[in-house]
Structures are given as structure tokens and as C-alpha cells.
Image (cartoon, rainbow, N blue to C red; front, side, top):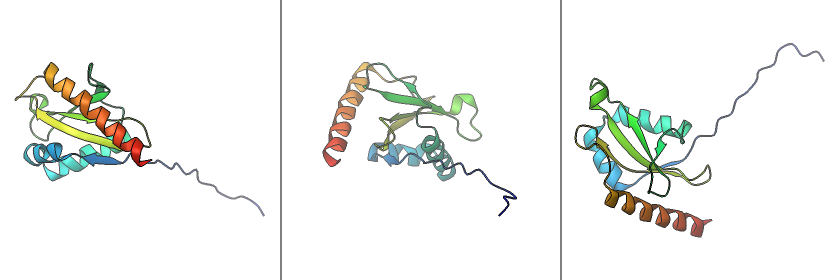
Length: 125
């Protein structure tokens, strides 16, 4: 038998994503359905793309553009990515125009939330 043609398959495993209720409420207000899907698709393929925020236990912040709003009209997506086995958790988001960054108290709360999420995940596995 002679090999005439072969195709290289590139199988990409996408990251599982969980939207916390706090995130979902804000996403309903700040993002269109299409923007929301694009964001989830992007994070499923690139979970490490956001910058790690100091003092949060590994929470990341991603700058995300909204259609027709320009650079200043974007949102900041706050999420936690632990590893490929644990889902990525979308925690919250805010408009760049509403808030420049998270306060230290908010960062401390996120660090506590991360501890809880990791503990709950480890109990399940």
C-alpha cells in the first residue's frame, strides 16, 4: 500500500469555564451576547492571557474591548485560572469608565474566594 496523502490533526482541548452569578449579572449589563461568547471562546483557548493581579491568590485581569466603544469603552474581566484540570472561573467584570482598578479590600476578598474555590475543587476530585 502506498501513502498518497496524509493530514496532520491538531487537537486542541478547550478550557472549561464557569460563570459565577456575580459575573453573569454584570455581563448581562455590560456585554452583548456576541461579545460574551467571543470572550468565553477566547479564554477557553487562552486561559493564561490575563495579567496576574498582586495580592489576589492568582486572580487575573483581562482587558476586553467592546464593539463600537473604542479603547476607553472596554471592560476589565476578572477571572481565576488554576490549571487545565480545574475550570476557569469568571468572577466579575467592570467597565473601564466606571472603575480604574480593584481596591485592596476587593483583592483580599478575591484571594479568600480563590482559597474556597480551590478547596471545593480538591474535595470533588
